[in-house]
Length: 72
Image 1 (tube, rainbow, N blue to C red):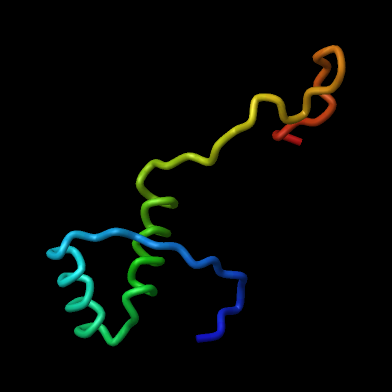
Image 2 (image 1 turned 180 degrees about the horizontal axis):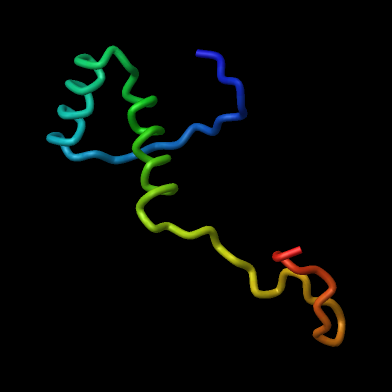
């Protein structure tokens, strides 16, 4: 299946019950198991309170002066 964006293969270990539920959901919705997993992951990352990581060193130059601000 071609994607409009770069993808990366990964492995996920599921219990037998999770795997069967995923298989059933894919069959009932006509969507692939991978698509359902991507949608679930997207939901967790965008709506379940997972905040983007902030790097404390970003914008710090020699001497500790802020040379870049995330608010700008």
